[in-house]
Image 1 (spheres, helix red, strand yellow):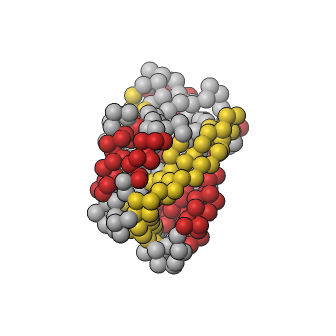
Image 2: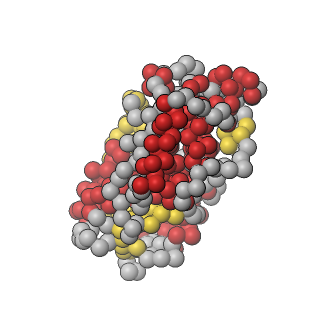
Image 3: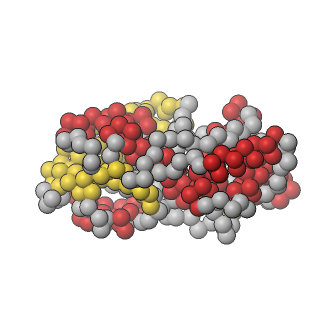
Length: 336
């Protein structure tokens, strides 16, 4: 399942595969680092297609959970039994009211907030709260809880009353948001050779990789603000929310989303990388220019550029009418 996620590369995967296959000797034992992993679409595709060792990293908690579930975690007997217990409780409508119902549904927010919010229908708010309560108060292992949280993130996104971000909601419930949440377990091909981290990107560059893929934020929209709600679904604790749409306070702010810092961040990142091949995704609508990027990349090695026209992402079901250009930069590091 692909989340409604700005910057998701699902529709560009075949272009990324083509660039790799035209320039890199494909071997089974390569290590591929997805430095800004997001929902994990690219890393997961490299694992499934080439059986490479995947190192996935992202600073956001929800991303960490999703990538762990998609690359590393098996469904254990404990998880299966626990999942059945949750489904039985939901079937009996034995709901636990919590922050999702109180702050992100119309009925709950009318009573508990200065703002009326319509991210979910009332019953789905109660369902989400009940599942979160069960996971948080269980005696399961950290890994088992992470798979359950990741599965809940997918289920929540399927019924959220949004277009693509959690920084706003629709004025009335759309068709998919009227359905009851369907809580299924993520069940992917995984391997213990894959590793997932939750670090600043620069802190991941002490190690050497065969291929490193970089897909940073392109513009001044902060992912931490737009998707911080998913961190609540991932079990975030000790947080506050604010404003009309219930944004999570003190969210992670990326220096790649600031005109003042994006160039220096790219320079530091590229300079520190120890990988034979570097692949960078960027947009012609990004806040650093094509020429500035090219100047930075050419200092590292031989750089090829591929231009891919495509439609701007709005949601999984809606396309913008105007095409934009996605740049794929392939840099062969001359120092390795």
